[in-house]
Image 1 (tube, helix red, strand yellow):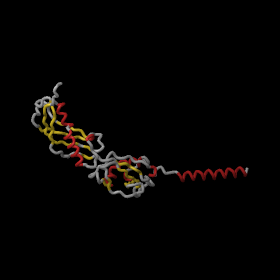
Image 2: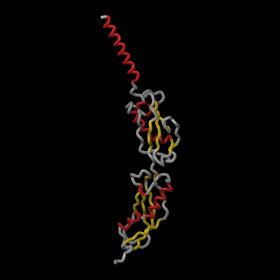
Image 3: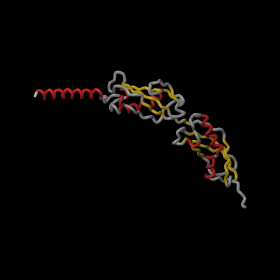
Image 4: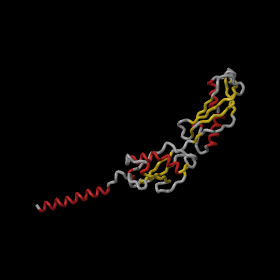
Length: 244
């Protein structure tokens, strides 16, 4: 009997010891080390896409960092933690980044706010890829353009014939040059925008002023917005190739 009690005593100690070790290795449910991803913002509002400041980056990230922390503690608020942004995963300080030329990776670390215990510990350096900022083309100016289109009857030009203004090579080239002049690092191309005009059918045998609108395509990764300018449009007779 004594022997049996001795065996049970040993087993009891072992069980307690095992339980104790498991408890020590368990990560607390409110520990920020659990956070390993932060969603990237759709865009970063900035006064200068070439020199986006840390403050502007943090403002863009605030909502997504809060969402990540609430994945640890659902009731957490922005007052319960603080975070900073770095150049790399070693904590290299960051001042500004250039988001005009392309996406930029930054690293975020989250810690509890001073004297707050809603969350504890700290996160690692979490990588977030900030999206390239589309350059707003509003206000772009295009030099005077003279557009010469062909028509079956220059005194009665149709809407279809007037659509040729939108793809007139010299005009398209001038528009692209004007956009690149404003945003040389945006990487814009003619596929980033569309051109329309307000031409009415009628007599274009002499030059008429036409309002041209240039609008960035919604899916353009490089530019946004639109601008307008005046082009001088004239129609000439289509050349007819003689038969035979």
